[in-house]
Structures are given as C-alpha cells and as structure tokens.
View (cartoon, chains in turn blue, brown):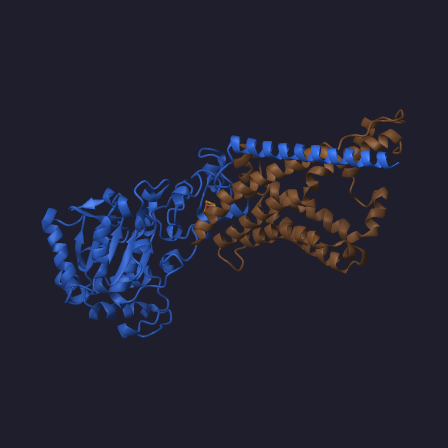
Length: 373
Length: 225
Ligand code: SF4
C-alpha cells in the first residue's frame, strides 16, 4: 500500500532501525551526495556540507515519504536490464526498489499472468493516476510496424501511450527504451524507437546501457521516491550522477593510453600486461557511463577490466557506431573499391577532357597567331 | 539532432563523400598536369638528366640552414623557414605516427604500424599549432608576404589550422565535450579534403613533380655540380 511511509513499510517487514540507517547511508553514497540539490517540495535543507550526517536527509525523507508505485513495462527487450537489476551488487537497494517501493506491475516479475495481471495493471494505473513511476524496458515499434510488438492483443505503442498518460515520470531503462538499442540497429526492420521519441509531454529519464547499471536504476528511482524530483540530467536525459564523465576518464587502463601502450590483439603481450584497448576498438572516450567506477557484480569487474574494449552501449545508435573492434577514430565506412574506382575514373575522364580542351584551345590560338602573321 | 547523430554523419557519409571528392579531384589535377606534356630536347643534353633528378631530390632533403647553400633561403625569411619546417614535421608525426590517426589509415588501407606515445605526439601537435600561428602572423605583417596574401591563402591556412586546433582541443577535452570536438574535428577534415584538390595544398603531390622537372632541367644543362 503506497500510503504508508517507506520507513513504516520497512519496519513492518522487520527491518531494524540500525539497518534502516545503514541503508540511508548507502543511498546517500549511491546517489553521490555531498550536497543535496534544492528539494523545496520535500521540505529538506537545500544544501548540506559533506559530513557524516550526509545520510540525514535520506533518513528524514524515508520517514516521511509515502511509498512510490512503480509500473514496469517491457517491449522489444531481452529482459537483460531486469536481470541485471535483480542481480544488483547492492541487494538492499534493489530489494528496496523491487519490494518496498511497490512494483505494481512487471512483465517478468509479476506472479500473476494473463488477463489477471493486465487487470491489476489497469487498476493500479487508475488508483495511482498521476503518481506512479513508469519504467520502460525495450524499444517500441511504431506506426505500421507497431504490430511487431503486441502484448495482450494491443500494440506496444498503444500500451506505452496509455501508461504514460497517468505517469508522474518515465524512466527508460536500458539502451533499447532510451535510444532504440539493438532493435533500432540498421535497417531497423521494426521501426523501433526510444520512449522519448514517442512521449514528449512527460519528464523522461534515460538510464541507458546494455544493460543499464543496476545502481543507476535504483539510484534514480530512489531519488524520485525520496525527494519527489528528478536528478540533474544531461543533454540525452541521463542522470549526471551516473553519466557525468566518460568511461575513458575513469578507466584503470588510462595510464597506458597516455603512455601509448596498447594491446594489439586479445592475446598478445600487451593484452596480458593490461595495456589500453583503444586499438582494439575501445569506445570508452565517447561513452558516458559509470562502469569504470561502480562496475558490475559487487564491484568485481567491468568489460575493460576483463580485457574487452568498451562497446559504447550507453550511447545512441551504438550498434551502428563503427565496428566493435575497429579503432574509434576510424571512419565509419571504408569506401568501396567500386566507389574509389568511380572517383578515380571521374577524375581521369574530367582531367583528360580538360586536357583535350586545353590543347585544342592552344592549337586554335597558335593557328590564329600563325594566321595573323 | 544529437551529437551522436552528427558524429555518425561526420564520420560516415560526409567523410565518405569528401574522400571520394578528394580522390577524384586529385586525379583530375594529376591528369591535367601530366597532359601539359614534356618539351622535346631540341639539343643534345649537356649532362645526365637522371643524375639531375637524384640531386634535385637530395637537395630537397637538405633543409637545414647550416648547409651553406640553404643559408640564403633561411636568412631571407627565417620565420617561414623554421615555422614552415616545423609545421610539416609536426604534421607528419601527428598524422602518421599518432595512434588515433594510424587507425584511420589502417581502416582505409588495411594495415597499421607502431605509433608514438601520446605525450610526444601531443607536444608535436602543439609545436605545429604554434608554427601555424607564427606563419599567419608573419603573413600579415611581412611587407612582401602581405602583398602575396589573398583570400585563397587565408583559406588555405584556415582549413589546415582548423583540424589541428580541434584535434588538439579534443585530446585535451578543452571547452567542449569530447564528442562535440570529435564532430568539429571530423567536419574540419571533411572541409579540408574537399578543399585540397581545389587549392595549392595539393602541393603535397605536385612537390614531387616539380622536383623531378627541376632535376631534369638541371641535368640537361649540367647546371648542378
Ligand atoms: S581501455 Fe578504453 S577507456 Fe580505457 S584508457 Fe583505453 S581507450 Fe580509454
């Protein structure tokens, strides 16, 4: 029941005050708090200096804020983002989001199925109209191709628009729902789109990534639950806390990049020594995400640490952004031999034509000179 | 349009088009120049033409003012001499031996080569940029150069300078986000690629012709010891 406060509901579930305070601290850390933004409507202090008390506003918010209903829709996706979330490295955070914040509807996690769950969703949408957070996973085919994604006899486009109408805010989780992801890769057979290309009248946050980093998902949902506002976003609607700097900026292989030491294949001496993966196609320099700092699986590792170049999965159109193993500076397309041939031929023909014209002109001029003598 | 889309265009179709224009344009220039023809020898050459060519190229390589013969050229305009030389050296190091640029060549011609560490390339880029600034200032204040400077010369300078400065800003994350600078860098390259065949920057190709022709003439006249 979203009417009780977050703290109450946790208490009812047997969470001790001590654990509650610990969790608040964890939140403060996950949200990157050293200073709280001005949350006027939350009645909290508008700024706070860095101190051990940094968790205080979180504690106060959790004690006073009602639970937040969440409706989670899936369209053209692989459920990888949900998978990542349920395997989040901060289980307390994800359990908070999954259990305490009331996920009213989730295609994969809901126990009920069929028309019953559809019914439950309709009820939730009615009951919490204007209050719930809509989380979207997967891209949405639109227009005539909308038929490529049909759930319960209705197109994804229709379902999204209906659910978006009553949402307080929309969180697009993963690259597919943010920017179209894999389904949108050329030639985009299903005419897939990201949420923000379809819904334009609601606040939308993109938590891109393939999958999205679970801490970023929970962090943003928690932020909204606690403060009733969206975190600060970048130009692509991604929360700056998690997408403020590039992977390259925080990469553990960066010193090798600077020193010009590169792995040239996946099993050469450089790869074994942990050299930079730029020449193996790393997209870290243009990819904004916190893989290099939060990492995956309880901070164990992330692709670059394990020896694989960054694919740039939190950026729009990363599937079409050049070969995964081709250096990032390389042009996207290499001209076809035929195109080069055509260019060469055009140059030669035009040149020869010009040459003939020139020589004719010269001859004519000489003839004229000869004639006038 | 977001930065990623712009970047895709700048690295994709626009670059593609610019490169093809460059190839066609250079071929056009090449054919027209070659078709100007070669004067027949009306008299028996006094010396060996081939030796003349070899010497001409060797002399082209001796670019240091401590060789007495170069001293005069150096003394006439030391700024052009030093800054021009450093600019070309910088260009070679950055464009051929910089890791990012080598990958461009690799993707186009299919093979790569070892590259220099970033700090070295970076310093050379800075040297190149300073040289370019010195050259344009010299152009603007030198009484003779001023007379020789028209719109085309300024554009030559600008279209070469833009890729250099945007590339430098890009490696140092100056003023704008990396991707935006990447777009600017690629677009300035695309402009340059189109401009080269239309301008005197095409001398990178014709240099070898003029050296050869001079060598032949010197050889014929036996004018070069
Ligand atoms: S591995 Fe990638 S992200 Fe890391 S330093 Fe090299 S290029 Fe940058």
